Image (cartoon, rainbow, N blue to C red; front, side, top):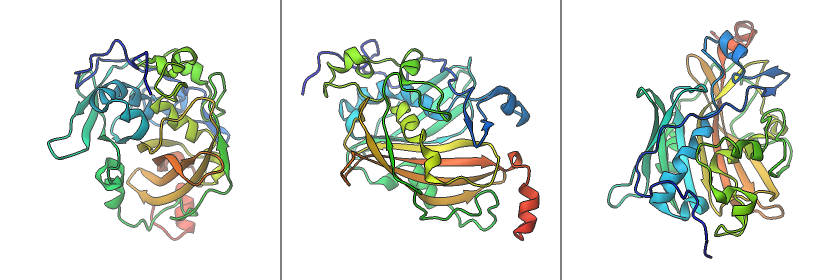
Length: 321
């Protein structure tokens, strides 16, 4: 394979930190379970936030030029990004991405992002190739979880529970991705923080794969757009957010217009003082095969104080809220 274009032609290949960017809010009209999400300004205000936050994986794009510079084409074929989200970002705030390359004899880079004033946004790891999953941020966090005995919102969910039905997904350039993601890939490419010709109809034909590829941040959209079909909803209505996420390409990239099959499984349940979390692994297959081409682990956290019946349900279940 050979390419006549580079993915980020205006980005210095030697950079270990990127420029300050102001990512755009695309989810103000997101809805699920019949209500607006935390990304709606009014809903966010009711929860004590200044405005609807930008979705966490939006920041992945700021790492793509840095990690391509570090790992080359492998980043788009076998790259893994694994992060814990630390603080929310609202539109108008500036964010910078940082990468610390692996030390001699190691294969995993440390990555993090900060706001202009140094406030941490996320931290985690990135790698390419056959690196054991346990060397990454999200599996490390899962390994440290204690068994949950006081779940209320997620009381009816079980570790090992599989998606309720088969899912097949596609992302076209103009395809509206539904109530969870009320925009298209074309809409995103107009405002993406790090544009690349490899993401476009014209430039994609000159990529190493001769096809346009799905940006890493949009893999989250692709896999999340049909999640309701899995039947993993807890008690509600309640407001959720992404607390951590890992996207791993096994035989990438994922392509625009390509159909993929999904299999979902709850791999952990946990709780904190403010949230209950369902950790879901989503495996991605080319239809008709059982060979995974990518996967995502998502810590989907639900705010306890956003569920009106939390205390009443806790008493009914014999739990202390």
